[in-house]
Picture 1 (cartoon, rainbow, N blue to C red):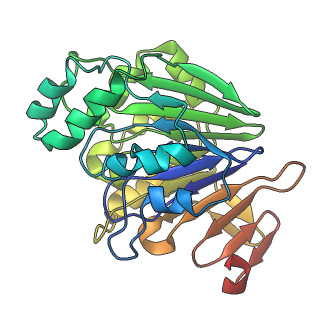
Picture 2 (cartoon, one colour):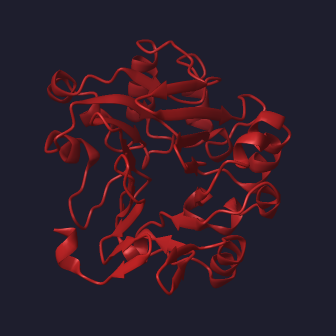
Length: 290
């Protein structure tokens, strides 16, 4: 199994690849500097299929590649079996939510159209040894895109990772009222920081329930992390031991693409665009990434 968090300038994008080489895409942001778009990446990959498209956040940047992913050419090669989003959002209320959040009409209209084709509301799903669980605050309790984010928990043997979208502290506290959500937090050992590492996405109380080994931040173009927030996340992390190095925080701005992979029966491995990190060893060799 492989989890890849892409270095994108706009929005967010991550790809989970199962042992049988099927993919789950979380959001579809893009990198203007490199020309990366998830649709192109997938079309040139060796994936057998796209099992899930998860929409964690309805912002224009997170939906940037949606028209290409839903195009006839792409769907003929990678038909999307499940579109998963906040279950309280539907074709009827999407236009109103879009207006409230100043969305581009064409992307919201497209999502409204395809929503009618994917009516199944999925809260839990197991696929090829990977378990997915989803939580979200409800509309109209919340009206802003950030706090209507879909939160995704993914488990694979000893890996527990959370993708919280763009939740702010208000959204975190609302979800913390749910005992099932708190129980899932206890299983997390890899934490993707909310809201691109912005201060408004930081909620200290969630760390009463877990201590991640590693915090990862997808921070957008020209957006360094505030030192105070960076230090907060580092202080919450126990660290992922790499020889003499105790790795606690990775950011896409500093490290590029971040990949967590665990081939069946092998050590967990962390790869960035600059180095490969393997449990019990620390390898500085860009050639290993080619």
